Image (tube, rainbow, N blue to C red; front, side, top):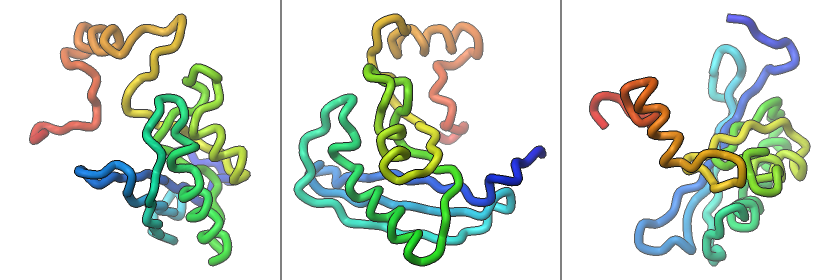
Length: 149
C-alpha cells in the first residue's frame, strides 16, 4: 500500500435521525490514525430542532453539529488530515455541496460520499447510473451491500 506522509489521520462524520421524528438526531465523528486505522477519537452530539431536509442544502441542517465535533476533537489535541463526509462535495448543483462547505469552514480536506445522486444538468439520473452498473457489473451499483443484505 502506498501512503502519503502528509496524511496521518483520517476521519468520518455522519448523522442519523429518529425514525419517527426527523427533527432530532445524532451526529458522530470518528478519527483514526492512518494507515494503521487505530481509533484516536470518537465523539457525538445530539441534534434537535432541525430544519426540514432540502436536497442540496445539507450543511444548513447538519453542519453546525459537525463543526462542533471537529472543534471538540481539536481542543483535545486531535488533528484531522482528511475527513470523509456523508454528503456530496463538488457533485452538487452549485459545485459546492456539504463536504465542500464543511471542509472550507473547518479548514480540513474533505471527501464527499453521497448516497443518493442529486439531479444535475448534464449528468445521468440515478436510475440511469444504476442501469449502467447493472449492465456492466450484473448488479445495480448499491456497492456496500453484502450477500446478507
